[in-house]
Every structure is written in structure tokens, then in C-alpha cells.
Length: 198
Length: 155
Image (tube, rainbow over all chains, first blue to last red; front, side, top):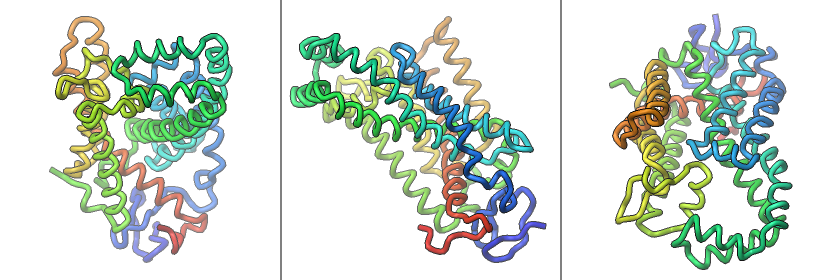
């Protein structure tokens, strides 16, 4: 019989929270492979690599314009890989683990996307002059604020700032959407306790 | 309608408020872009949505910051958080299936605004509760040391 680590109340086998004090019950025994944070890294690295590559390659990266598809898919891939390494399979993967591996996948993916994107950015910077970039922006957003346009052009002239800004942006956005992907995968893959505790 | 209220603790209530507020800001930004004509908001959302004018709702003659499907997803999630809609696995599976069918159908024979909006709304409604629960589980788990005890100074 499991008991709450905080108040000592008895817990059902499937309980994720203590109904007496609200403390998280956890699903893995202390010291078990599930509780080892390192076990999240391998799936997250693979998933992050895939989502980062897909999000950086020109044309392919447009998949993210469909509800951040590559980021959400990357989080789901991370959760699937993590579940495969668990004794119970991905059908028993807790939502919290799906979320955590999703966040890690997004973090790695953001870094990978930025690194892979560097040569493409450099290529674009050498191949196009500021006038061409301005023309392209004005085509995409005809009513753009002149000040914003000026700032974007300044950004494009200093690749390092552009890369750093991309890194921060990618890491935050990919982590958010990959977390959602990881959670949704864990939910539809058969998180048995999800409905019962609701 | 069942709610999450029965399983929420003090920390969970704070997380719910934070998540709801973040969702409200996100949805507010989608509406603010055409109203205030803020290009920076359009630029931000352009990385996660195609923003095709003909596939977007308009406000004051200007398109919203994201397409109809995305708008419906985000506002569905906001509504689900507002009413604390309990997560249901069958509903999420139904919503994902419906969106998949609608996505394919839109490219083959039926491409209506209403079907895009409904499939998005359903997915937003179904997913929000799971996202909240997953986030809560993750944060609770990160606060728990290997011995199984919860850190006393954890926020």
C-alpha cells in the first residue's frame, strides 16, 4: 500500500495526488529508473534533434506554420521514446513526464534549429543586399511600421544579434509547444489515471 | 459538468490562475494585432501560423494575428480553462480525430470556415485540461526530491 510522503494518508495505486493534503504522489518508487532525471535526456536529445532539423531547413520549416507542427510533433516523439524505455511502455506514461520530456525536447530543438539555421542565415546575408530584404519584407507585410522595418533591417545586418535573438525565441516557443505535444501524446497514448482523477 | 475543483490544492489554484492569465494574454494579443495595428504581434505569430488573410477572421477590416483554426484552438483552450473543464481522454481522441479528418477534407472537398472553427474549438476545449494537469504534474515532480519528500521551500 502506498502512502503520502507528506501526511501519511493511504493512496490508491493509481493516485497521482494525495486526496488529504494535495501533495503529488508520484508514480515511481524512489531511486527507480523512472525517477532518474538523466533518463529523460536521451529521448529529448533525439526528439530535439529531429524537431530542430525540421524547423531549420528552408521550406520544410514551414511545417511550423501549421500550429507549430514540428515542435508539437517533437514533444510527442520525445514522449514516445521515453515511454518505450519504461517497463510499462508509453501507455503508462504520466502526463508530467510527457510534459518534462517535451520541454527538454523543445530546449534541445531550439538550440539545434538555431545552429542548423546559421549557415542558411549567412548564405542569405551574403546572397541578398538590404534592399532585397526590405523588398521581401514589404511584400510579406505591406503595411509594416517603418520603425519596425528599420529595426528588422538593423537585425539582419548584424548576424550575431539575429542568431542570439533566434536562439532565445526558438528555445522559448519550441519548449512551450513541445511540452504540449508531450502532454497530449501521454494523454492519448493511454494515461489510465487521467480521467479517474478528474 | 465535472470540473477540476475537486483535485486542486493551493498550488494548483495558483497555477490555474497563472495559466488562465497567460492564455488570456495570448488570446488578447491575437485580437489586439488588428485593433491596434501592431506589426510586432503579427511578426511573432507568423512563426507559428501561416496567417493567410483569406483563411483568417477579420476585425475592423484587418485579419486577426492567426488563422481561423488557430484562433479557435486558442480561444477554445481559454474557454476550457475559464470553466475548468475536466480533461477527458475520449474527448481529446475525438477532437484530434475530427481535426485530422477536417484537415484532409479541407484539401479534398469541404473547406468551410465553420468546420475549421469547430474542429479547432473542440481541440482547444479538449486539450487545455490535459495541458494544465501535465504542467502541474511536471512542476510537482520537479519539486520532489528522490526520497519522495516535497521540498519545503518550493514555491
